[in-house]
Structure formats: structure tokens, C-alpha cells
Length: 392
Image 1: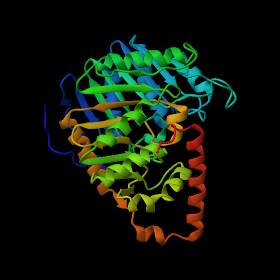
Image 2: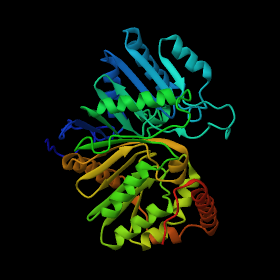
Image 3: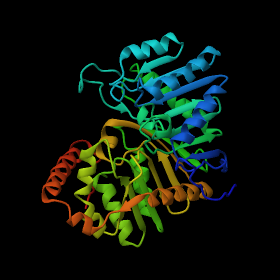
Image 4: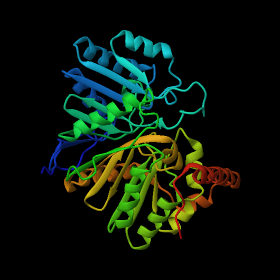
């Protein structure tokens, strides 16, 4: 098991990825920002021999989208089976003609459960998952294919996101999950289903969940927070937890667990930021540390609990994620990898501003009122589509 020094920022301010950690059954690489994510994925696709399978919520016809389309087309031209599964709601800004063009370049591009009118039967769940399988490598995390995720030095918006790269037997489970969603895209089966590796591996669990039968990713977060003894560190771009998860965080802090949350300082979904901010004082009063990331938009979705559990994936800790969307997360139980993710959290916390009661009190009354209205609206969403409320 490899133990390496903590990541250090490069000239662009992004942490440099360290070599893969060898766990009990896998080699796992933490990709701590979009420069490392793109370098790793594009390098693997350019070397692909048999398969490239990409599942994403967002694919745009922009600089990054076209650049990656060229990478996919090169693989297809070599005879690699190259497939792209995209969500038509997440990719609604992209013209259908763009995907026709991809298909003309031998990229098998397929929309996930398309619906012409929002809220018609079959519209939900949407596929918020991100999966990339390239030969013997698999990836997941918050990144998608649009200029939001292109680094500033390359002309993009420079969103901060975190992914992981995995080698080992679980790659075939990633492949199985992709094949399942690929079939579901055409309504086979009509109702999407969950996939989990359960206790198959001692070092990782892959969970692809879908609303309806349960909320596997959400439930695993809750279970581990309930067991936490030392720390619960969460970095989440759209953090407005359902009531039961919030209760778990309060209970953890009450028993002395170090509970800290990093949220965006700037966001593309202001209603979520406002709704959460309306509760910041309660969070502080209940013992949570709250930090707002200051170096651009943070889109990461990861968590660290104690010294032997962490997760990276697509799960947004809010009711719409649990109620309307497919998600995919990898849970890692290797202490060396957990320590590495914890160091990334600490580095991101250094780029964040701590929320204080004084700062909250100084906000204009009008802003506080708007925050409360947003909070009321999101609490209603939680009641309508979120997990069942906690039983007292």
C-alpha cells in the first residue's frame, strides 16, 4: 500500500495528482482538478484498443465538447467501439444536429430516455451519472463535457471538480453499469434499476442508484455519518440536505465529531445557495464548520468520514438528487486513499472563507428575506420528492 506526500499546487493553482494508491484489489488515482481529469481521460482514450464508453449528464457543443469529440472520433477511426450516452435534459442547450454529426464520425451517441415535453411519463429519472470506461480503466466524479469544466488557461470557465481513476476488477462493474443505462435509454427495462457491488470487494463499492426503490448513495452517507467518531468532511456543490441527513450531521457534531462542509462561494444555482445560507446560523449553532470556496466555482461531490471511508461521485446532497436523478458514487475503504482525499479537502478549505455569525448578521434584511423564501421553497421540494422525513 503506497503512502505518498500530500499534493502540492502547480503553477495554475491545481493540485498535482500523485501516483495511484494500490488498495487490496485496485489501483486508484485521485484526480484533484480538471487539468488532471482531462489529461488522464484523454490520454487513456488516445491509447484505447477495444472500448470507450462515456456516460454524462451534460455534453455541450463548445470548445471542450468539440475537443473531446475529436478525441472520441480518433478512437472510433482506429476501430475502437466508441459510445456516448448523454442526458437530453442536461444537454438541452446542445443542438440535436451536433449528436448527428458525432454519429457520422462513428461515435455511437444515444440520448437517455428522451422526452419532448417535461413531466410526461418517462421524463424522470434523469441520468445525472458520470461514467467513463476505457479498456481496463474507469472514472467517475463530478466533471462533465462543457466549457464550465475547461481550465481557465485553456479558455474555459475553470470550474473546480474532483474525479477518480480506477483499475482492477471493479472496472467490469463500471462496464456493466454503463451497459445497463445504455439499455435503459431505450426503455429496456421501462423502470431503471439500481446496481451495487455490495461486499464483492474489500476496498471499494460501486453504487449506481436510481430513484424509486431506494436511495442507495444517500443511505450510505447517512449510515456512515451515524457511525462517525472523528470527522465528517463534505465538499458538495449543491448542498441542501434532506431533513434526515441534516439530523445525522447535528447528532455527529453533538457527540464531538468534527463536521465541516465546503460549499461554493459562487454558484450557477443561486436558489440552492440562498436556501442553504438561510440555515447557516443554525448549522453554526449546532456545531458545524461551514466554508465557502473562493477560487471560482466548486463543483466537487466528495466526502471523508473518519480514517477509513470516503466517496467520490455525482451525488448532490439535496432532495432533487435523491428524488429525480440517477447517481453514481464510488466508496473507498482504504486508509491511504482516504488520507489523500482528506488532504485535498484541507487544501480546498485553505481556498475557502469560513462563514461566521458576524458575516451573517451583517447581510441586508432584504437578502436574508430572499434567502428564507428560497429555503421555504426547497423545504417544500424535500417534502414532495425527497426521502421520507425522519421518524422521531
